[in-house]
Image 1: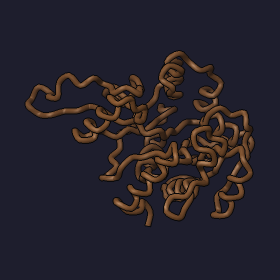
Image 2 (image 1 turned 135 degrees about the vertical axis):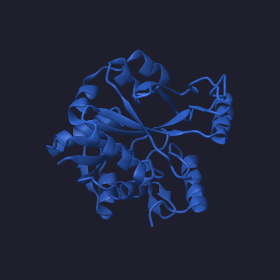
Image 3 (image 1 turned 120 degrees about the vertical axis):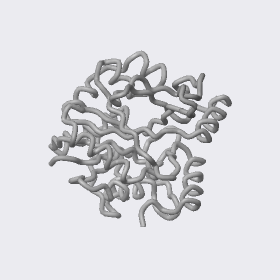
Image 4 (image 1 turned 90 degrees about the vertical axis):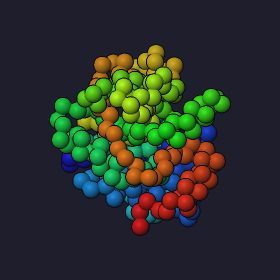
Length: 265
């Protein structure tokens, strides 16, 4: 088996208990995410990894394959590896698609998959979208009011991640590239990851790191341990990025879908 998507779906969220079962315009978060995953070309199978039988029952109702995992898993990455071990699977490429990623275009997931298929030296990759001026100003205003939503990423010319942060990076001092053209190299990180099995296994064995704990961003654990993270820039083609962490976010997701239409038809 070359490539799988695993959707970690935890029932016991402290901020939004039962979140995978929350309804968005007649379909649950989990079903919407699973349908996005199934629409990605080149994927051999999609699994839902969860600690709760209620999620298993719901996922089975719409045809998803599931795997119960340990309740001791502290994050989605650990849950994915636990599920694969229980399934006795060692796929070459594993994509971590969070169960609240209901507005992720399938073509962006496919871009991540293609990167690992074409570049054998890449062991861990993630996504980013470039912010335009309006999006940048909106995020800057949100951050100035103390908002913690939105993670930013910087990367080198080969696409290797330099740093991830909840602060806006880089600091925008100059908006010109010296040729009279506006330039804004500010990228929002999309929390979607692709791993090779051995990198996933190594990552889970590592202890949390200082920057990771300070920022509250688990991907920094890879950088602090010298594991390169390839950043794949994608274009959402006019779609709005959004993730669901609260009931309020779920309502906003509904508004976005009503405004922009369904991702899948």
